Length: 154
Ligand code: HEC
Image (tube, rainbow, N blue to C red; front, side):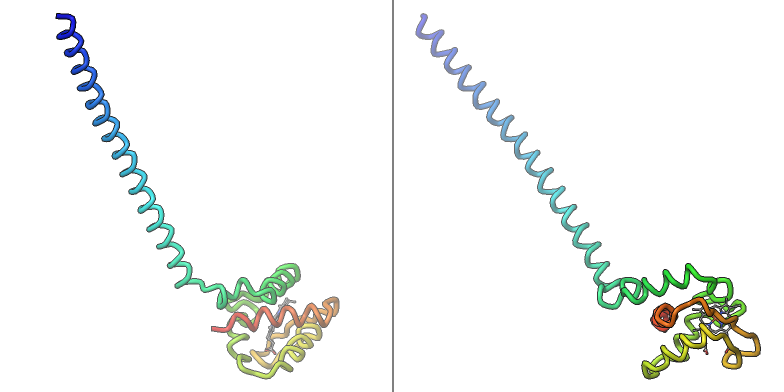
C-alpha cells in the first residue's frame, strides 16, 4: 500500500518534471527565436543603412568633409561675402557654383588671381557690377575662400 503510494508520487514527480522541462524548453526556444529574429532584423537594418551610406556619400568624394572646404566656408561665412553671393542663386554677385564651373580645370594660378580679385575688388568678368574690395582679408585667407568656392563645381 505504502509502496503503491510512493510509486504514484514518484510517477507524479516524474510527470511534473517532464512537463516543466517541456515548458522550460518552449520558453527557452521562444526566447531564442526572439533573440535570433531581433539579431536578424538589427543586422539587416544596420547593413542596409551602411550600404546606403556607401552608395550615397562615399567618404572620398564627400566634398563637405574636405578640410579646404570647411576652412574656406568658415572664412566666407565670417566675412560679408554671403550678402552678395549664394551657392546656387544669383544675388549682386554670381553664384559660387557658377564661379567654380567657370574656372574648373584651370591651373592653380587661378587661386592666386581670384584671391587678388577678392582683396582688390573689381568688375567686368560677370557684368558691370563691382565687387567691393576687401583690403582687410589676408592673401592666405582669400586663397582659402577661393579653394572652398572652387570645390563647389558640379
Ligand atoms: C558687394 C557685393 C559683393 C560682396 C560683399 C562680395 N562679392 Fe564677390 N563678387 C561680386 C560681384 C558683383 C562679382 C562679379 C565681378 C565681375 O564681374 O568681375 C563678384 C565676383 C566674385 C568672384 C569671381 C571673380 C571673377 O573674376 O570671376 C569671386 C571668387 C568672389 N566674388 C568671391 C567673393 C568672396 C570670397 C567674398 C567675401 C570676402 C565676396 N566675393 C564678397 C560682389 C560681391
